[in-house]
Image (cartoon, rainbow, N blue to C red; front, side, top):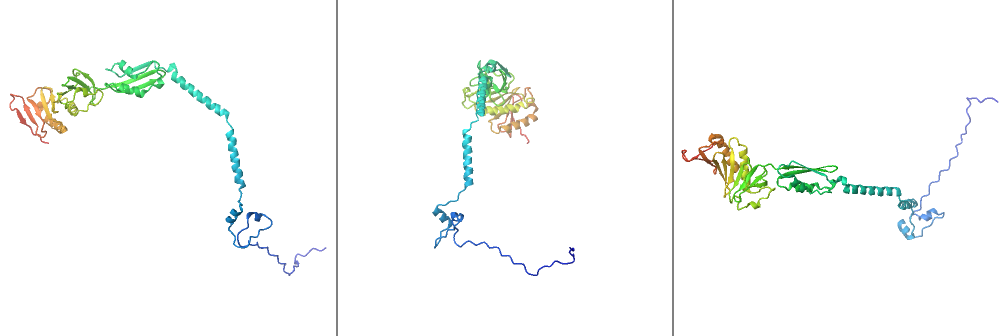
Length: 352
């Protein structure tokens, strides 16, 4: 058999190929409402009755047919079953562990509350110089079987601070049974003598009287309140440990603070408040500085400071020919000399 020549072309027929049958187009649904769900699943289509047809939702309500959701219902039933199964299951091991922990905590609390090892056995008091230690210990109120962990330190501090001489108190606890009390007493700043009763009050810088005596303490400047200087007030109205709110005492304390800053040139002996509430500074050596009422007190003291710097005879503790300085009118101070020393009254004008 001869090989086929490569140059020979294969004979092809010129007849056209038979045309393929076109694919059947989908049959459009008939006009009108869609068929019901069970009719779509059945083999025979339901023919709607003649006449106007209701909408699909109306038809569903009329026939009582609803779409079911089997997957959602199964998941809900599974969740409910799991919750019911978990409720019935009790972890007894965890429950017993929790009960044992609560019992252990209660036992520890009871041991700490009633253990004799935590009773207060020693009380240390430091910082007191004039208040007896026994008085401060009694203010603490610690019994023989007081537990150191259950002490009310706030109330104890308040009871100790109620002592007029005590300015502040601190309480420290050291296990197993030591309580340490640190107090700070008030510092004496001046003495106020009420001549209506003859009582001397020792006050601190905040004008708080904390101690009484029949005479002033040594080394303290003196404020003298004449009878009636407090506007009819009596010594019984003065409360130890509370600030003295009398205006006359506050003005006298301002004069005293001014004089303490100039103690080298103006050594003050006392501040006197008369029955009318007028102030007078008594210098050592017999010189009086009459300030009058407390009105414009700062300007009066400023005027006297200028006068003190100009007149050297007013400085120091030596006796001077000037007996008094009248500053009732602070813009025109008057100098009063002693009898027999020449002019008894002279007015001194100060240039500002």
